[in-house]
Length: 250
Image (cartoon, rainbow, N blue to C red; front, side, top):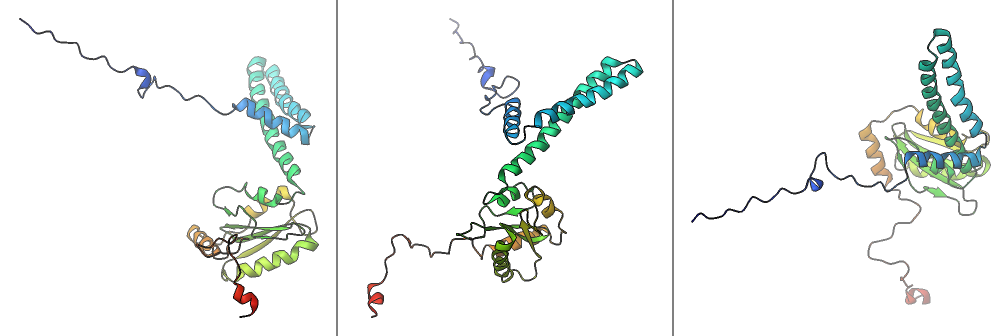
């Protein structure tokens, strides 16, 4: 008697496979339109004229291309091109105004220079924390390392931050004697660089170091440390107790 053979098991559903039918992960963050709407709202709080700037940027290209279309006998074709160029112009205006509004909201606040320095592109090493700070006036000095060398950026009034900046310059020069050192004061005083122009000024400095030299400079700067004093490993400063014999003079 012939033996019955079971059919081969059916292949796994295409849902779990890789390929055309792979299930896409749902988006967790807001969409681009929602992000643009939020950027517009934040910009309008600081600069209410953004509305009219965007309307003008949208209408001017459309009107120009529509006139060209009427003169050439193709108003619909050139009208569509005008709408596309108008949308691009409006988005460009929104980006520029949003950047200006962000700098305007930061200007005058402690640590504003550090926030502006974080907008530098690749190739720059920006310290997250200031390398020097005055606890009384809250004036700060930030450090940037790049192809031009080491840049010390101060944040505070010129008559008050000069000494703090000069002290940090001498402290850095002890470790880096042959590396170019630049001093930049951020602010609205005489001889200072306004906050919106700070990243551009740093990027325009003359490049004198290679990428390998920048990495070597950064390693040598780690010896300076930050604001916190170095503490030996294995010692908890909050539980350390003074020596009683030393206090008694023995």
